[in-house]
Image (cartoon, rainbow, N blue to C red; front, side, top):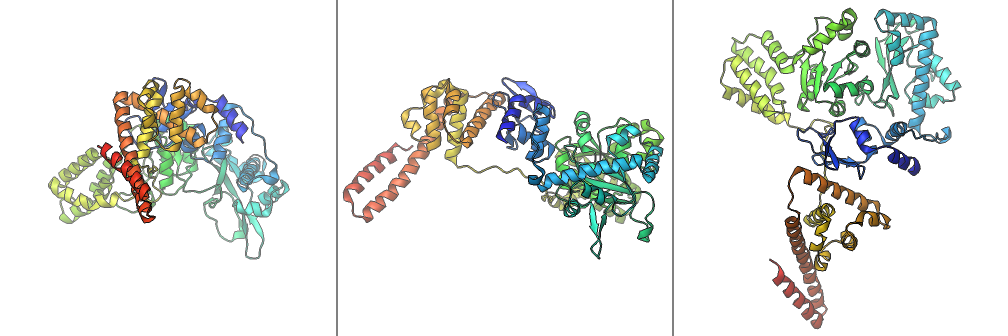
Length: 584
């Protein structure tokens, strides 16, 4: 794999790759931006075109083009490799099917199944009826093709037989989720007599299917469920997938908001009407994993859900979770009994109007709560309070939280202090970590490590200051970094060129690149008194080195005393006393 990876890196510029996802601003030799991986207002995300590395000094994430694509797209290395290879025009050799991983085999099974379902929709007798149904629903031929909509025949084994003829085993097809097994051991197709909606990952590869019942299954004896999804498999996990995000992600970034709907046709018809920043939860509640993925693209959500503010529905719990994750949420108020697909079918421009006129979710919650209860009654005041305060407690911005606290006190005609006291009961609960919530972890380093790296970071950016590091100072560094300092002292101007030729480990080279980028970024953020900081850091490093040496001498003296080596004790004690006097 080393050859295609290197070829991709040589053909692609990291700045071009990253600027396809976020807006970069040039600052000196580098670029900076607001980090897409955590919430912040000031840019702490830096890209170095010379080193082809990126790093966020807020959350600590860093890496090259491959790691950026993995993070931003939420995909594994192999998928990032394929995506960047396509961008770079690098051809990856196809592996022999016998040695392909199970994951790759599943991708092939699902892709082959998608083509089978598409063919059945366009050519099968009942498939053509299903296609006419879609056309009657105002889904165009172009959209049917774009979203690769298909049809599963009513027969028991049409897909299973087709896949087996293509070389896939029954076991593989079962593990991919497409076959079921009866009590008597017979296998049959999971999807039968259904319009099939392929579900795509962020790299636009099919990872699952959703099927809407269409037709009749007389053998069943009863009407099957209206909608049926593929179960969780090696490729498909409904908690991690949002239908349509692969096609909507660019529009979400451009509009800086994401519209959440509940069904496949809602997404397809909205996209068809020109509102492209739409994804579907496919009828499930929002999960922490989905929210983490969405946060890479925008902090703003617009929902078109039918919400009950006083209830405990899965939809409301998902929205509450989004609020706790720091999303700004708005509600598109649709006519009662209408879903987005209905609105788009009747009047596409009305859908755009409802989105444009979406309201803050707190406005929505307050209006619903006060319409549901009589605020003139003390019991209803308590019900309004218990309905709204858990929501207010989840607001991360304290200024916004204070605004809604005052608003609640005003509308209830009570003191603000009393509302704040009640709010405190919910605030502690809202700060608990949600399941699946990301936490940034950084490797702990001791003070000496940090000081050494600080000095090298400064020297890499102010090489003329290498004269401040004398031989005594060099001896204070740890072995690996001592070697770096020695190479730097030989020729600071040609250090990078010379160092690449030295046979050293990749971790050390990676550390140097990170330290150089850290120094470059710091120069842009603040004015650095490089000479003073290097002198102070060297002095502190010297003090740490001396203390460590004193501790070691103390142990050696004890060992010499135990061995009754008087001359050695005298020699070590002399060194100990002299070193102790030199400490500040």
